Image (cartoon, rainbow, N blue to C red):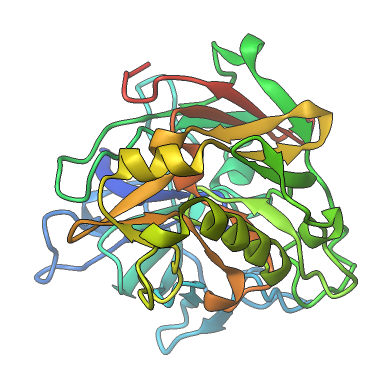
Length: 359
């Protein structure tokens, strides 16, 4: 389940679909040059504000290699980038500058974007992490928020949620937790210093606090164990110590209903045949606990994901199945919740909401 926003890019604007991703930096759009331009791709020839980044731009030849943005010089002396994501998808193309035009009075200056000429995805990416080249940094946005609508089933129509740039009018009721910050000079191979890292304390299931050490949710000297909130990941992934305790509790509560030997998508192995409501009642609510008394509470009726074929899975997998050493709270566990990112005060706020209603 991707959070897709439609944004007007270029002069005159061309609407582009982009996946809202707080876990990545570079924003990029699908670019195709005629005669191969599919109807959804951005056509640079139709925009008067489009420009390309040459090879001699400082981004293309940085004094210090920027491993978060691999660039090179292509045969046309343009700045070429290639990105590979944790889920195996990729995108490559040229770095360009282009405007976002929200209205006649609200236009960004030309911002650095990727113009993908080869990608495994049909949508682009709106990179919203803490990096200097993310959309939020380049557009100087102080706050943004989103509200993920519940997805009832795989087969039904896609629901519509909300995405807010700037202060959220409902923020008076939000509860905030401070981000954990790391200096980029701290070389920790497993750490993503540009992610939104939360100080997680523990997990409750059906009112019971699981016996998981807080250290399982904190970065160790190698960076492993970092807990990040990510709009661009569907499910939640936990490091082995935390995952095993969650699985142990699920087996106690609903073991006889578990689908033996079944793994969905190579990661989710707590899956069930049968009625999601009945199994949800057996398991109860789940809560992710953070500092300041802040919690994300997942109600029993939203515990299971319909993965098709009458199979329901608890939306939690092991991080090592993704090849990462972090805890990741995915958008499945952010449903019916305003999640606000305050980039000035470095904090994240949560507020309960009915996200299927438009703002």
